[in-house]
Each structure stands twice: as structure tokens, then as C-alpha cells.
Amino acid sequence: MNQGRIVVDSNRKLSIAVPTYNRVDFIDSFMSELRLCAEQHFVNVYISDNASGDGSKEILDRYAQESPHVRYYRNGATIGPDENFERVLGYPDTDYVWLVGDTYKIAEPVFNAVMAALEEDDYDAVLVNVEDRVVDVPEQVYTDRNRLLADLGWHMTCIGSMVYSKRLLQHADYQRYRDTNFLQTGILLEYIADRPFRIKWIPKHSVMGLKVPGVQKSSWQEQTFEIWTKRWANFIFSLPASYDLDAKLKCIMDHGVKSRLFTFSAIKRLRRKNILNKESYSRYSRYFRFTVPIPSIVLRLLSILPKSMF
Image (cartoon, rainbow, N blue to C red; front, side, top):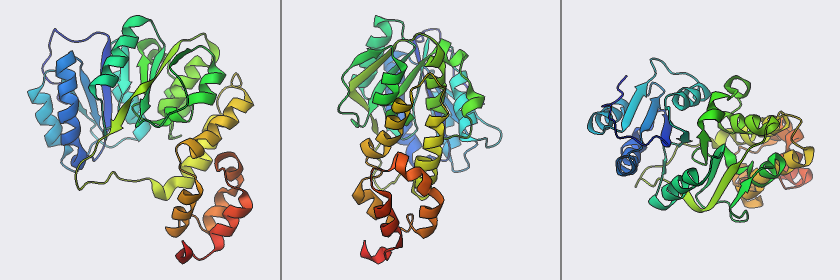
């Protein structure tokens, strides 16, 4: 473990937490961008490396040695991704912690907007846009859990969209949402399920994906239906009863619609790649009516047509 050099002059309001695993193609560019933000604003960056075996360690060691604001922790063995999220969120001791994915960048406008929100009021969390994908929800402060779930639940799956308060993290029920793929979302929605809350939504500025020439982000596309039909629906339906069924149903469907994961064009691509086929249709069809905005009979037809047609 290398925690970097301890400094007195650190921002006590906000830290940035980064879980990472085998991102050697991105990590140097990612850290170069993040280091500038950290040093300009005296924000500490906590990195939990899930025992990467691809050369990430050497790069992260270098940044931790060079910057007093980079705190690098490396797990002795690979643990589950959810356990790594929990671990990195536990390292900072600031008032707020921003969980950021290792293939994103925080530009100055979105950082300044978050800091301004944290200074203006005592929020339970702050939510930000990611890659400008939310276009129809104005800036506001949420105090109604069902409205939040219906408006932004689909978006809150993004690593980088959520800044958690310390009190939220201290009460987070990590165990309940482990191995769901949505722990980062579940701990927030669980926390506000049975208490008054204030959550600030900032749509104007976005966390953006990091572009590295010649490098493609690894994809979970082969698991599209497992994650975004079965696990997604089960996760939202499992939320406490204080969330209305209508809000849950809208949240579940909105992901496929608003992320454009299940547009007709996207479904045709999944058939072309043989991700949609007779077997996957049979396995996941019970979830399609909640998650895919295309009639089941059309999906069934697409699943049996020759993939060469697409």
C-alpha cells in the first residue's frame, strides 16, 4: 500500500474515490487529468486497485509518489467489484465522496458546479450528468423519493454520477446490494427510503468519457440481457416498499429507452452479434416486458431470423 505524502492543506469538503482493475490502457491518461483537478483544488484522490495484473500498479505508484493528493491502495488479491467499491468509499474522511469510474474525466465546469452545491447547502447527495445523457430533467433539489426514482433512477447506475455525503456512507447497507451490479445505486436509494432527505441534481455540466486514441473500453455487451433485463429489474423491484410500483416500473423501462440500449437499431445489432438468439430469448423473455420497449412478439421473431439479415 502506498498512500502518498500526507499534507495538511487538503480540501475537507470533498474527496474523489476511484475503484480500478486492469485499466493499464486508460489509467495514465485518467490520472493525468485527475491529478490536475486534485492539485488545483487540494482534493485528495483515493484509488483502490483490485490487484490489477496488467501494469497499472507501476503507473499508479508513480502518481502516488509524485502527488501528495493521490492515495493509492492495492488489494492483496482480487475481490469482487462491489467489495472494491465499498473499500474505496471507506478510505476518505471528508464530508462528501465522489465515486468516479476509471475511464471518465472531471472537467472544470462540472467540478466547480459540484463544489458550489456542496457549499450552498447540506445535501445527502449530489447527482451530476454523465456524457450529457439526461436532457429532460431540470436542475432541482429532490425531497420526494418516488420522483427521484422515476426521473433519475435509470441514470444513477453511472459510476461518476453520484457524490455521497459522509452520513449516507456511514449508514450504507453494502451487504444488501452486493453482487447485484448496482451497489453504488442501491446504497443511496436504500438510505433515502425511510428518512427525509435533500438531493441536489445538476444537469448542466457532465462527467465525460475519457478518449484514448486507439483504445476501446472493455465491454460487458455479452452480458447485456443478464445485467440490463434480469438483474436490473430484480434490483429495482427489490427496493423497499416505500417506493411506488409505478415509479419502479418507469425506472426499469427508462434505462433501456433513455440510454438507447434497447432501441430497435440496438436490438438488431445484438441479433447480428448473436447476443439475441433463441436461447437468450427463452432465458430472458419474462423480463423483456419490463425492460425492452419493443413488443415481445417482435423480439421473438428477431431472435429466430438469420443473423446475416442484420
